[in-house]
Image (cartoon, rainbow, N blue to C red; front, side, top):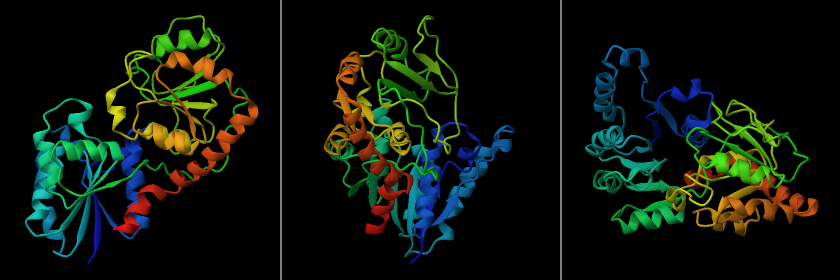
Length: 332
């Protein structure tokens, strides 16, 4: 039996200066290190401009099944469900063992129709999902395929030295800043309580002037995390400081893995899927509202922060080495 891992992103992630395509690229490397052969669907961007790229990809997918033997195990990184569904149908005709590595659940994240996704999940032999909460919700929605829980996405990096922020009352937020509607209000609130904020992203949102404790640091290569400033990594997604996206009840944000890899203690939503993991391992603090952050940080002494940082360094080493997905692959 041979083992294969199919990446439907192709090589897109190599050209992006953000972490949006890092997770599938890292998964490829972890699969490779665990004895899998990697197959990337061709991106064919230049043919997309001519209007025929999609057609060629669909033909490629239709022929893909003939590459494998019936005894092979094939993992597919789950992106757009239509493309993956075609891959799974092609593989299933010849009886391969199929495992889906789930990156996102569209019907939980965007409220799309669930029936097609659930049918796709049930066509697999096994799923690798983010969290126990995600597995429980999928089971409640009718997914019968066995599921293994990843807990955290890995964040591969060779970095060994990291920026040690002297101001332990500072927070870093990295990601899609324009999309993060809560930021302006949070910045006003935090600045008024002498909490410094560092922002990383491709574009800075419109923020009221006059906040000397705010610093926009631009973007960075997702593989170069050694110079990220800020003492605490904020994991939040929502319209306001009091309104977090319900999707965090189920998913394991890649942003959280970035912070751990860069050895930043965490600030997470108390209702999030990873709150229990963060709390049980002493990796950070939890809030119901971002307005709680200034008061909580004022209670953290340098000694307390040092304890958080030591535990985060241990967890960060694991995500940088790919041990979360790696452990699952070794169990299969």
